[in-house]
Structure formats: structure tokens, C-alpha cells
Length: 351
Image (tube, rainbow, N blue to C red; front, top):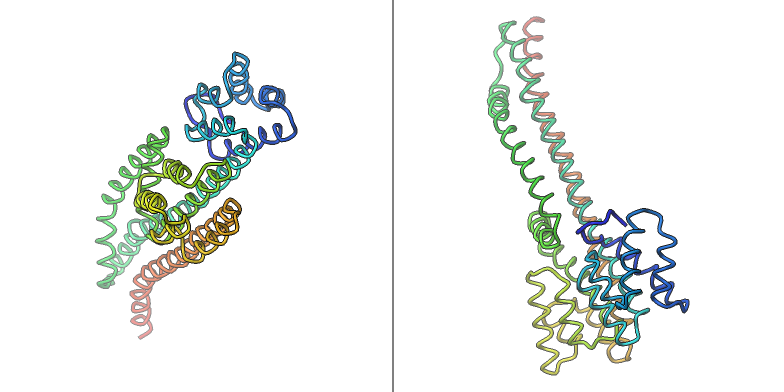
């Protein structure tokens, strides 16, 4: 775990915390002793300080959920789920479900980050190469041709004009890039800011199909968590909606909840409002009829996760060759623009 402060723990840190605690409780150790053991095994000063605060609060009579809330490093929905687990006697199951939920959230976040970062780096590298060629290399050849009395062709003249204009443009874009980076860093300091940043990234880089796949993956993972914790469908839908960002998918969740309240089965209501595909809804329906909805929901969550991962990977695989082609064509154009006058000059000398 990271340094103590107001920052909430990351999804990966939350998953590891829940996993360790669930293993202790599963072996028959009570909560207080479990936290004590985790404190003894803490490997960093940050872990020691965090677990010491939790242990102290539990010693003072706080429940685990109340202690985590007081510490301020854990998300409210996690605290609420642990509180439900304590009240219903299903704390072990809740912690195991939270482990899986945050593991999936960490995986989705990592995939999104990689899907955005790699094309962005490729785009920046391409832009830098072109800027250097047009603004620094071509003017040298222009001067050489001028000294030799060779007229440059229209393509070179156009590229040189672009190069002159690109210097001011590059400075302006660099300033915007620095300001954007600073704004993103400031937004990432708070949970609400991270949500806004995530929605902005999704809107810029991802299409509707990919956004829908990611939303389905997160929703199915949240529903699996809720059902594993013993909540009924209505409350599970309500709490799952609270976990997701405010977007069009939240409206679908609300519509599904309305459908369930009007008497429709959850699989049917989910399919009608587009929460899941027909195949996924069919799997849920089979689980609903056979009385193993919780297991079916876990399977659907795994399918949705695989679908979103495949779409993200497909997007990266399409962008990479496209950027390489753009770079190759642009560099080729610059080289041809330089070589053609040289060929003409050599031909004249040969004649």
C-alpha cells in the first residue's frame, strides 16, 4: 500500500487487502486478530501506519466497516458492502467478492491506460519526426539547392511553408500539452476528478461499442459482487448503479430496476434495456431458472471482461499499423521531395 494520506487506495491495493483479510477470516481467525496478523506482516511503513490505525479503532470498539470508514482510505461502497457482510454474517463471502471485483476493476483500468498510452506515444513520436524533417532538415537542402542554382519543386516549397508555420504551431501545442497534463494530474488527485478524467478519455478515444463493452464488464462485475453478498436483485441493481460513473449506462440500470419492480425477471429486464447481449441474458436466464443466479452472474462477468479486453486490444492493433503507415508515407514524401531535384541535377550534369 502507498503512503498514508487522503488518497484512497488503488483498485489493486484494495483487492490485495480484501484477499488477505478474507484468507484470515476463512481460516477461523476473528477480525481483530486478522488485522493484528496483517499488521505484524506489514512490509512498509505506510502499511504499518494504515493497519495500526485500523487495529487501534477496532480495539476501541469500532466494527471493521466503521474503522475503515474512519481511516478515510477506503471507498464508501466498499465500507457499505463490508457492513452488509457483518450484519448478514457473510463477511468472508463479501471480502472474496470484493477481491474479485477490485481485481477486475484494476485489470480494466490497466487495459484502458495501455490502450490510450501506446497510440498517444506513437502519435507524439510521429509528430516529432515530421516536425524535425520539415522544419530542420528541408531548409538545409533548400539552401544547398539555392547555392547550386537548382530550383526547388512545388512540393518542397509547400513543405517548407508548412515547416515555418509548424514552429509556432508546435510551440502552441507544447504549451497546451503541458497545461493538459497538469490539469489531468490535478483531476486525478480526487475520486470525482478521476471519474471526470475517465469519462473524458472514454469520449475521446473509445467508440460507443467499446464504451458499452467496458460498461457491461464493470456492471456485471458489480452485480456479481452484490449477489454474492446476499443482496436481492432490486438492491443489487441500486448499489451497482452507485458504483458506476454517471453516464447513459446508468439510465439503463435504472430502467432495468423499474422493469424488475413491475414484475419482469432480471434477465428479461436486462435484455430489454440493453444491459446485456441476448447470449449473456440467456445465460442469466438459465441461472435464474435453475436457482444459481450468483454463479451465472460470475460467468457473465467473465465473458464481459473478455469481450472488453478483446475490443481494447483490437483498437490498439488497428491504430498501430495506421500510425506506421502515416509515418512511412510522410517520411517518403519528404525524401522524394529532396531526391527529385537531386536526380534532375544529376541528369543535367550527365547531359
